[in-house]
Image 1 (cartoon, rainbow, N blue to C red):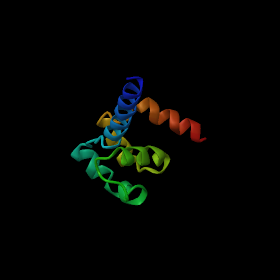
Image 2: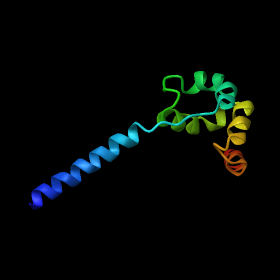
Image 3: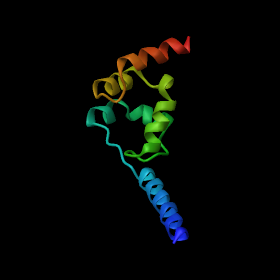
Length: 91
């Protein structure tokens, strides 16, 4: 019985991990338009609505165009405070 419980817990953990990997994110049309060149330049190998793209764009933060960053802020994807914090930490 204990082995069955452990097996079910392991199965549940794998199921949760698989669901997290398939999680999708949808960017607004305004963000897609404003960030199209940034996407191609920094993260073009990732699917549009994937967590991998979100992580890639986050890593590319300092290299993103002002137009893209402004659109991300306007859409609530990132706060103005976070943008300013990153600018300050770059100096």
